[in-house]
Length: 164
Image (cartoon, rainbow, N blue to C red; front, side, top):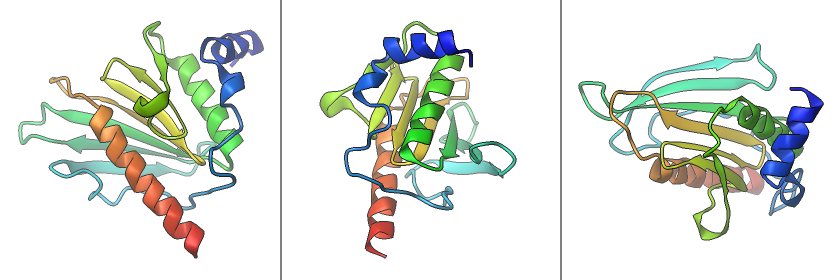
């Protein structure tokens, strides 16, 4: 991403308020992956971890109905730090072409920092993990509830790793 585009993204989404900071210090998730049980009533159709990307990424498709009309694409990025996760957020925000993407704050926030496009796409970071959840099927699915479920699963994973 060019420096001018990055500055624009940082200014538009108020990065000075969240960049490089997590609310609970240095928490990390290592060897992140989807188990398939994260979403009740959804089935993990396929998941592929790509170690060749920087940061390593997981691309997955989740199916809700038998016909395959309700699909979600969930991409996860396992970053080296909170700051690296926020860099990844900025990179993804730069790739999104809609002017309707907005930052969520307050009690509607998911993760440590989150961005939404109506209720059809959620992008958020929790500690060093970035998740991008979006519709991938014929039928539009509201993704806010799904994003909260993934966020709660991440919180539990972080807490269990902290206790080790």
